[in-house]
Amino acid sequence: MLRSVHDQERSTFVVKNSGLYPSVVAESGDVPAVGLAGARLLTETSRVTGLGDELSRVLSAWRRSWAVHDPGKIILDLAVCVALGGRCLSDVALLRCQGEVFGPVASDPTVCRLVGTLADHVEAVEAAVNRARTVVRQRAWALAGADAPTAGISAAHPLVIDVDATLVNVHSDKEGAAPTFKKGFGYHPLTAWIDHGTGQGGGECAVIMLRPGNAGSNTAADHVEIIRRALDQAGLGPRPGRRVLVRIDGAGGTKETIEFLARRRVSYSVGFPLPDHTPQIYDTIPEAAWTPAYNTDGEPRQGADVAETRRPAGPDRLAQGDAGQPCAESGPTRAPSCASRTWAATG
Image (tube, rainbow, N blue to C red):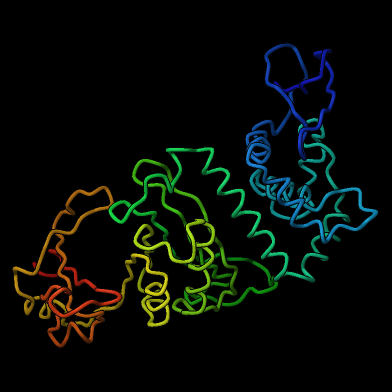
């Protein structure tokens, strides 16, 4: 059961605002039940981290002088609505019917007008919201203390950022929807996630870059942009060094993306396609050059080895047999690469 903190009559609700949402307490007893009470976890997180106040501040430029509803509160209401299963703007009515928990909620026309206004200045709004997210993320990590993703990071135990794309199918001709490379129809967003480590859950989303369904899988400009935004969200400066490890699959194996990672001086693990005769190439690498591969928990990976190449290399360098020599013997390099083998390839 939920009731507001000033409620002395257990059968009624009295709203007391704290930030953008009312303050309520949980208690047992013969009082009216409140639906969607679990959303209080979200609104309370917003209050503790200051997300609502920060959104209100950065979006204040788009608030009309006569406006009753705060743009930051409206955007936050929409985010809570999505978490509760909402699929369109009008689903914010889920919150409107529980004013004791969510406070005043804007009408559907007001929500639509705000979205239209923000859409007219989409780049400026996106930059403002990203700034707010960066500030709030750092505040949340500071509150987490030793449990924060950045606590105790080093070259040996870096903060891991995973970059990957996904497909979102739609069933009508929506704005930006297009045929996908898997013969579907919808969107092809690119995402960046901050890994919390083994046994610490699924991590947290740092950035989602909205893209049409026909966006390329290995578009270097998109990978560079999302990595830049993810590093900004991590709050470790423009060149965090080896304290950060960026992991990308073969779609990120482009020259422009690798050069950007090297300029930021981060560690990285990027895949690239190998030629059909890769097992024969492995046979040319001296056995002494191979060392065990390790999982993220520091334990050796079953049936996998790694050999360092002499120069930053792709399949062409491997095909020339340019592997098996430590980088130190051929002078410093910006981005030493590795060849890897598994028993599936070598038998």
